[in-house]
Image (cartoon, rainbow, N blue to C red; front, top):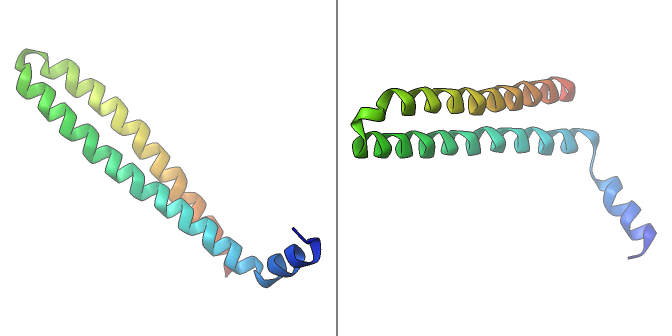
Amino acid sequence: MNLSLLAETVSQYTDKSIYAIAAAIAILVAAAAAIAMGFAISKAIDAIARQPEADKKISSTLMIGLVFIETCVIYALVIAILIVINIL
């Protein structure tokens, strides 16, 4: 690829547009985590329906997993907020 063409293409993007793309990626991470939470809850409900006697162990494992997913979402949203603040 021609370096002058690459430099011209990169120069078309401003800092604000790159920040906006990064913030959008962070929001997509949060959306993916929400889908993962729904999937985890669905599987936990299926497992409890199959083995009702193991509901306490399944529920505690589910809560730990949801906490880790939620932590990822919080980090992604904080990063998105910091990026948006940097744009302004």
